[in-house]
Structures are given as structure tokens and as C-alpha cells.
Length: 178
Picture 1: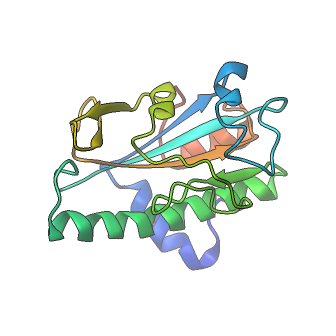
Picture 2: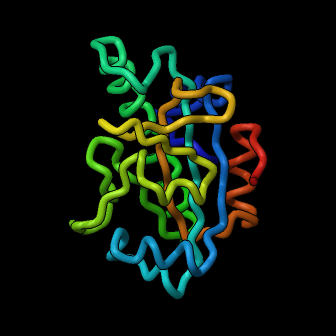
């Protein structure tokens, strides 16, 4: 089964969360080449790469800063990290490589240190349906339905998006592939 016993309740709450959106994107060779310096322990140039975006609709507007925004963001970083760890563990048991981007520093969570980063406002996320807006002083992300009330996390894996294990994962969360 997908969840480990100690996180079953946590995952159950997320599965019924209407503010959670998970999508998968197969990466073409040209897209994969943009990530070769990010994942030093996986050859993205010659092996499959699937991005799994995890979006949370937020209560607060993430284009501004306040204590409420900071608190909500910290809670979502914790939730995403738990979820990403569970999904990467699940994919690992199916013999796939998987890593996720730590939202607090933009670096692969499991991978070796790298100078490349992938913050949520990175233009490479446009390949995965995420719009970035340059406000001059900073960049923000914008979701089609939720506007700037959104938090983004991302997992990368060698599992093709059509693989039965990915489909099972999507079914667990009642979501379809893009």
C-alpha cells in the first residue's frame, strides 16, 4: 500500500483535501536537459524524468508578506515535505529513483549538494503549467483557478507518468495525469 503506518492518518486527510492538486508531467529530452545540474545523482539526459507537481490552495495571498503568510507557508512546507517523503519512499520501493525539491532552499532533498536551485518562481516550472509573474521587486507564482493563493511543491522521478505505480498514486488521490 502507499502510506507507511505512521503517516496513514496524515495521508488520509490529504486525500480528502479539496485544496490539494497533484499533476504529473512527462519531461521531453529538451526539458530534461534543463535539470541535469540539479540532479547530480541521476542522469536526466539519458533516462526518463517525470515531474509531479503538488499545489496547495492557500488561505492567504502568497504574493504579499505577513506573519499569517509566513505561518501558513511554514505549515505547508511541513505538509509537503511529509507527503513528498512518503511518495518518494513508495516510488523507491517500486525500484524508481525519486527526489523532491526542498521548498525552503530550492535544492534536491536527497541528492548531493549542487549549485543549481529550483525555487517555486523558477521559469522551468512553466513546463509544468505554473505561471510566474515578475513584479519588479520579486517574482510570484500564479495558478489558473487560485491566483496567488497557492503553494507549490515538486517531486521528480524516473517512473513514467503512464506507469501503473504512478497511476495508483494518482488514483489514491483521485487525480488524473496531464
